Length: 393
Image 1: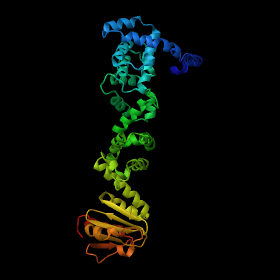
Image 2: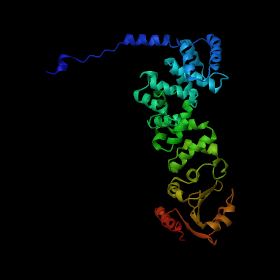
Image 3: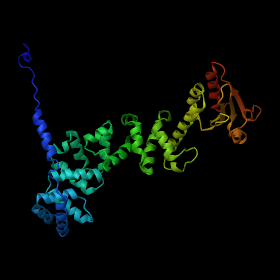
Image 4: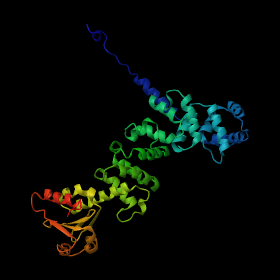
């Protein structure tokens, strides 16, 4: 006989007890807060007494023992205070660690959200994670252990960013689990650090979503923006670029084919990849679907592209030759040597140029023309392109 037939599984969930615990938690959520009126009276006196203390740790600790819990609460809550020098803050931090309690830990966690670079806050939180119980902040065990290691390091923000980034989760989800306030300075700095390290990874962009990344980059200082976006532009193939991110790049840094002044500091590879992406977009707008599909595979070899709308003409530059494609279907593609083309035909590439003036089969720099009328024109073009790319005309 199966034992489960005799002893059925029984689950008990104390619903009313849970509801009562939530009610009490909400009711006394602010019970440890001190009124502004009382703080205004007590804080100046406390600071005056602490300033007068000698720089002797044993004396400072003895003073800490005499303070009331409300004094510790006020000192923890009002950090970093106004017009207080570093020496006085050092004494206060020593006092708070000597008289540490949960209120100090919770207050300094809130301070860390807005002042993530403050070394004194980090010092208190380092102490906090070594003395606090396992339920501090309601953190998961592995996160609490990670914080214990992070706050004992010399690179708190970068180490924290690395740990969160490696989780391969949406950052909004990770921030909740790591108790990082959504709109805090800490969240902004973590985003910056995480983007710098992980934006070059496809899984990261796919996980966060390019739209969210674009929003985070939008108001970032230009120096930080360029440092981060360079990682992305150099790591991704231009065919895999995300249009919303690249539109933002062009909006902030301008078209690198026209003006390179704002691109200073970015790698040559990043700039070249953006140029290729722009070439691809222009050809997509200019050519019909079939011809675009053909020339797309040669974008890596293309060094420049000039397009005029009326009449519709595109000049595709390769190392030693140029291909002219005309927008209207039925026109052949014309091949010219680059040096002669730049000298004699490139100056004519302006609106309202006569199409016939660009079709000069008698020019000394003329190579060949190929039509698109036959079904096998793709393979015929490939034969010629393979020779031309090797300099065989």
